[in-house]
Length: 166
Image (tube, rainbow, N blue to C red):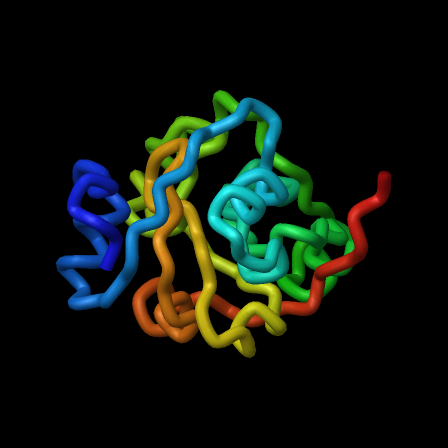
């Protein structure tokens, strides 16, 4: 467990995890605008591949969905759409994502979402021993076993990762 001084106040995400009986570790860091997973991984001294980003997307009917992706990869929306039976998938605008999730962009956690939405996870995320995922506020990750994503969120494994283009 993190040092007492590093404790972060509860968020809807940590309330959800506690209610589900999920063990997690707290990993606060100094949030940097547009720093992304590279910045959080650097500050925490963890592999960016184990930092999982929560991306709020929508299908052709503007129905929201969440995709959980490695920090050092991006989502192939074409592959994702094909695998989930959608015609098209695209990222939500920040204000729309915030409305669906209840979280500020940059602090979006898949746990404690305002609305129930389908959750998808890059299949290789499930093979990592421990992942670091947003805990419901900017500058705050929680460390969990990846199986939590399928057991508590019912996340469906997909293969939609592609290298990040510079």
